[in-house]
Length: 150
Image (cartoon, helix red, strand yellow):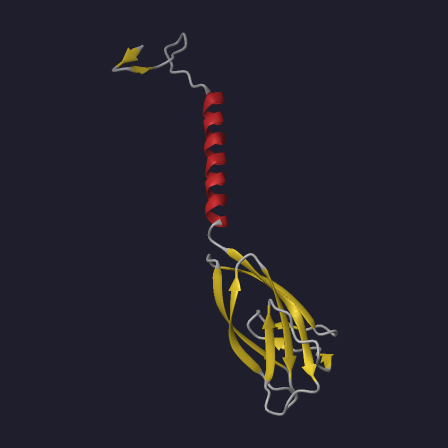
């Protein structure tokens, strides 16, 4: 039976036949397409920031120095330094240094290639260091931090 350009397939009793196999195939193809689109949208909506480094006590620091932070660059090697355990790096979701003064953190942030991040490094008995650091997404940033006793 054909009406207005639409084809209906009927069985011998005149009932419309439904081809369930084709419907299931289209449903699975549609669901797969939705998952692919959703994964592309979600992956484009966030990015990863990665940081790692070491916190040292600058033993022979000049009296007027509050400390120094080196990001992605070589730190001076002509200093007397000791690793600082349990220093808190406030900007990195509360990262704390290990016994040998090292830390490593990563976190997901909104999209963008460059992030300006407020950083505060502190430990009781040392002068706190505060500043703003530009971090590039999807790159591991290396920190070398020198704290000075109060």
